[in-house]
Amino acid sequence: MAAADAGAPVGRSSDQPELIKAIPLRRPGRWISAAIILIALFLFVYGVFTNSAYDWSTFGHYLFDQRVSQAAGITVLLTALAMFFGVVLGVLFAVMRLSPNPVLKWVSWGYLWFFRGTPVYVQLVFWGLLVVIYKQIDFGIPFVHQFAHVDTKGFFTVFWLAVIGLSLNESAYMAEIVRAGITSVDEGQHEAATALGMSWTQTMLRIVLPQAMRVIIPPTGNELISMLKTTSLVTAVPYSYELYSRTRDISVETFNPVPLLLVASAWYLFFTSILMVGQFYLERYFARGASRTMSARQLRALAHAQRGGHL
Amino acid sequence: MSDSGPMVKAEGVCKYFGALEVLKGISLSVDRGDVMCLIGPSGSGKSTFLRCINHLEQVSAGRLFVDGELVGYHQRGDRLYEMHPREAARQRRDIGMVFQRFNLFPHRTALENIIEAPIRVKRLSKRVATEQGKELLAQVGLSDKAKAYPAQLSGGQQQRVAIARALAMQPKLMLFDEPTSALDPELVGEVLDVMKQLAVGGMTMIVVTHEMGFAREVADSLVFMDEGVVVEAGQPREVLSNPRHERTKAFLSKVL
Image 1 (cartoon, rainbow over the protein chains, first blue to last red):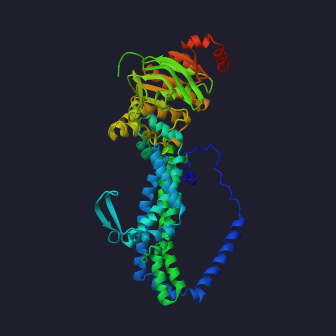
Image 2: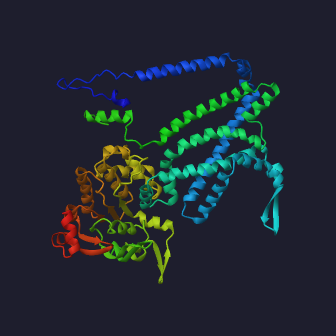
Image 3: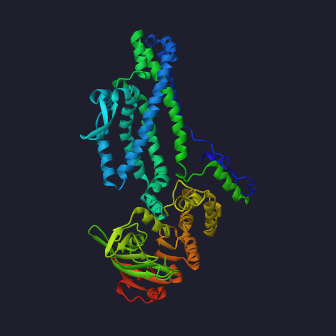
């Protein structure tokens, strides 16, 4: 354990045997394999920098081009909005699917069946065609009387159609992730909360979902990273101001696709790295109480108490 | 509700899971301030009966009253109407339950486990609930473990926190479902001590247990169940030393 040294007992009496200082086990296999990988890596990097096809000067020229950085911002915005609505709807559909109410259960099942069963690209094409298929939306009593009309073309911009398309598809996947998380929580937890007089909603929000988060977060991080790149499909709507479409459009002008693909990849990698850091902290937060291992602070407090001190 | 009459009264309570009959007409009553121990072989329906009392299981036939109030249903004339979950939750509020597997909330510290329901269900302020929670931790001898998570406590300590959590709702009735069966032998005593202390304090308790010593010493009545029926009931000493039925004799010879 990492905290073992920090917590080494102080004030040991001289008649106790000496602390063990053993020579660590030698592991030559690790050194050899690390050396081989380093050599291979060096050769690859050397090749990348000497091969003219990569055209690093063009890469440098466009990496912080205003059009590209704007497109990167739009990609992040699309990802954030689509994931936000995806998660909210996903939780809703998961809870509906697990609820004792048969109407909610089957509505949720039908939704999942449709949105998981069709490719997201096709869905996005259809959302793009929405304004053509449904020219206006009427509110009122069907076949009898309509008191409000919305002109779809003026109401939905291409950007929001892209957000809707991505969110609805994502929510179907999120629903299954959340459902897996909820069912992973021990049944006794639900029972204990019920026995204390907590309502079903209170039990879900306060007891079950916080514990389910530990199971939900890793695959959700996965979905988020995946969504960052799925945004490149909104070109199907067609929306073309996000990172991938933008860099592709530029490369069409310059006849030089490789460096611009690298520019896009660099930005995607940058955002993904940030997301991974965020995920680390989230996972640590929701791991509260999941392990017997005590934090360094708790161990210090215990050692202190053992020596007769007060907490 | 009423101050007279038994705390729990069961009249021919039956419970079916599909075609499986688990309880076949249980009739008994528990007076206020009394401790009743339920014993019997596993699968005899003891736990199911206990779970019926706070409506974690729905009774299939018969009537079950807690504090003079029908559990889980409204009766108007001869008709029974299913209770809204909100009302069932209100009934459960006054009934504390302690589980064999503790069922503490692992993402909350000992103290947070105790104050959760008083804050959310009884709408106590966090300050009042915390004060009360600390007193309860002291009562079960765990003042120094307020900030520990359940996984960092021994089984006996977890069960004592679970008892404190149930007491925090100030119940009029406590149900114990084999509270010491999941514990190492040396930890059983500390949990039984807390329960004895509660019994002495006048709490009405129904305890499903295999601890015959506890039953003999603390219980006011002892009920032996087998295959979904009450085989024998009476004074603990009487039932334990002079069982009248063959089935009781056979069971006791195995556990005593």
